[in-house]
Image (cartoon, rainbow, N blue to C red):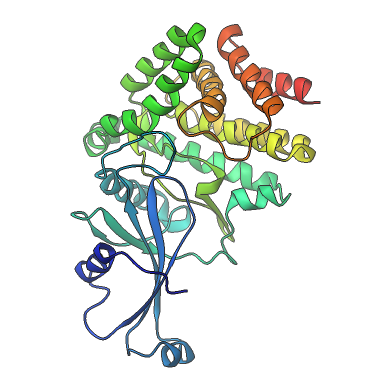
Length: 351
């Protein structure tokens, strides 16, 4: 440990009050998504790390800085002010649901786009994606993730909260940059015969304001804690269409079965448990109409993770890409508008 921490992040630690004079800092970059720099920071206040460790008198935290150019091959630029809305999403969810489902925000340097939060050690909070990679498929985790997500949407869809939350999360300009353009519009260009359908979905998504959306409900952004899952990385937060979030989650569960084909049945069971648990919370609109829209988003996401600006790194064989494209195109073209039909088609074609 002790990689070179960027100077501006050291300045942020000073601004946020974590370091003043004489402290020893150890820093380690953490792996994550493409949109941010994330570091583990150990601060030893007495100037001696060995002594501090021996006395257990040091502080460990995690700091995160939003990037303007995302770490992908294509040009993908996003305003760094999304960092403030990510902090706000964590604080809003913690207010309604306690810190059982999100890390605690410790401080925020809004000027530099850096915030500090609890460091949750991987030995106690494994990343869900890593568990799936290693063959650990726990139906309870899928159920809890989807149930908690549904409850967040249900609570934030309340008419008494809606006006205030729309004002706090008026971030569709950011959501367009980081989700609608790279996932919908870029994908539509690669599938011109579906362009009108995908563009219409994108236009509807941009106008739909029903609940507080996370925007990146992926297994890589979920820690599996002793008391249930912890949501991370809310950089795409917007008051928008909650169908986006559940479709995003279900898309990842399907794609993981391409990555780990021996886990097909277990992952499809997770898919089923997740959508059933989530849909049981949908009371802000007709659940059947909600599911239809979410299924179409799911079709777009399958195509986007092969042909959009952010393809998944673990699907590399052309035959697998053809399979995913076939399911995505069929959902949109043939209007497969229930999760059950999508699951059945996936199982039929994958077996």
